[in-house]
Length: 334
Ligand code: AQP
Image (cartoon, rainbow, N blue to C red; front, side, top):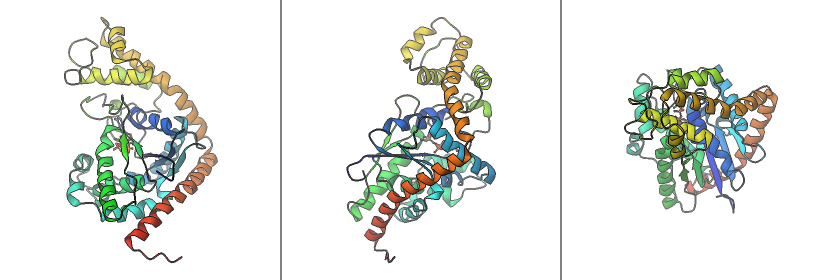
């Protein structure tokens, strides 16, 4: 909360091409808060370097992620859209919060365990302290709500613990945020291994539908999606994880309920169903892709937006960081 205004904050890492998981679990829900909240949506490039990135790819994907934010309906006049590394307060507050976060807390984070298993040759300190940088991102803006997919809920809960601990020592410093998850689509699963989350860094491109995949590719990927034994289109995450995941995706893109979908495909096989999911996904993404191309063709416009977003975000970030510095006893002679 900044003054009387409630705040929404979230971010996406430019660590790969964005997936329909990122879209349905996070970005699509960001604009819900644009009218009533002060909203900050950030391209979190500093988070992305916890695993090795090719610099040219990271730079390109940073532009692309910003363009996708706008293509997904985030109006830059109603939302502060910016790049994390351009607002130095994020990293500064992260250091401070490291001193208020326990080793045991960070060790329990599921994402740290998963990513350190996947990147066993590079278990760096940044991977371990990722959640304190994320807490800094959120707390800098006195955030009330953080729209995220369910995989990030644990990090937002840790952020709440850090904020409460800090507030106990230094009352009234931070707003304690709430994670907000979409009712449907909070965890879209891999098309190849439907018990595993769909991730942009998955090495198997067929397991993932990217927001920018063309129509034929989208339909082909859904046709090849792993389904379950039997032929019934029925929602049952334990017995039919593959079909249930496709039903969730179809529901998210068409607005139909799970019961409606079960009725629609009663007596029809997986082939018909997969084609329908592919077509619905491609139809829904087509306008986003067209807008994305238009934004990407105007690099100067994107850079102007980055500057504007940085100026807006910096003003809020600087206020919170000065408050924290004062509370901690740092000398601030300007
Ligand atoms: N499969 C998913 N279903 C629903 N939501 C998802 N999110 C990610 N995957 C899914 C949500 O997208 C937002 C941005 O995610 P991120 O870029 O911060 O990183 P992540 O959660 O680690 O996502 P990825 O795609 O799995 O990236 P990599 O492969 O780089 O680790 C978050 O709100 C997230 O919950």
